[in-house]
Amino acid sequence: MVAVIGTICLLTAQIYKLERPADLVQQKNNHSDTSTTHFLIANLTAKFSIDWQCKLEDDITAWQLVESWMTSRQITDSSNIKLGCVLKAMQNGKITHTDAGVKGTQLKLSVTLEGTQMTVFKPKVYNSDFIMVGTPYAGKDRHYAEIAAFHLNRIIELNKVPLVVGRKVDLESEIRTTAHQNLLKTFYYKNGNTCFYGKCHYCRGPKTGVCGNNAILEGSLTLWLPDSYSLSQPLPHPWRRTYRETKPAVWERDQEHCKTVKGTRPYEMPPRLLDLIDISIFDFLISNADRHHIETFEYSRDSIVVALDNGKSFGNPYVDEESILAPLYQCCVLREATYNRLSKLKNGVLGQVLFNVLKNEPLAPILTPQHYVAVDRRLTVIFNKIDYCFTHSGGKQTVLIDDGYT
Image (tube, rainbow, N blue to C red; front, side, top):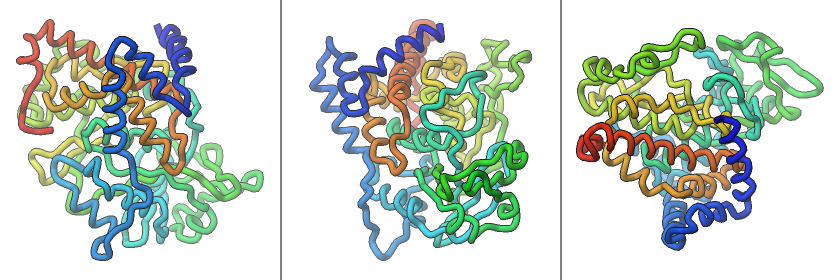
């Protein structure tokens, strides 16, 4: 099955040219109103494109602007015209302090920008055309995946991902000169290039390090959430994996697992379960099978589920890991607002708009053409699962829930 998907995807990607990816949309909609589709694509592209020439007023900083957008139900205003001001400040802001990001399994840096704004830098490990094989969660974090996931989350208007931008850093003049001793002692040189291996669970010296091109290294920069929106203690995801191929998780053995989840705090009360299902749809679109914990805002009873750490996504455009959708097809409920938003993105619209938005990102190209094909194909799979729920779980009036949240 994977081989068949791969063959189809390769053939389709040949049509999906970087110069004119809209040709794919026209082929997909050769029996529909293509002018309406192209009009929708144009409108959504205008709505979500980033103004990289954005300028801030003198009375507010980029970091204050982000905090003004935040509520218990959103991290960012996905189509705000000033979003480019913040991303540009992240991309160009002066680095004042750096340290090894010691938490977690993956190599990353803690980077403080001027104005005491904390960020996380994930360095380039793979090229964007690298195809990850193996388990759905295989490999190291991919910097381009963090960038693409942020923008896709905006386009589907979940607004649950912290801001991310691509950035090139000078390991000598920007990182070494500002580095804490914990990070500084992990620097080394290889073939005339500046390298470091940092501190993390899988950081094992130079054999796991990364090197710049001379001293220049690209990566993703993720904005740290403000103190006023501190995160609660992470909870194990109810559909988490065992990460052992010989030991299936409870939800993989029990197709009635959702009934157990619904009777467990905090999922018995809105909006948490529907938020989890929203996240499962997002994760399936980006092919992220590594959502092992959920995190929410500490002091908000109606907090969103914050979608942190999306670096394991966009690994293989030829594989659709449908088990990521287990919360959707086992519970057979979905937020009506989510359904309505996704419905507008069918027939090639999502992939086209994502391409249009990403093509001007500082590190573009972010994704290969095959990945844009993949997100459209996966959206079709999502609607097939929803249609199955309509048929077997009481119709739209039972499956689609208006809980007052978006």
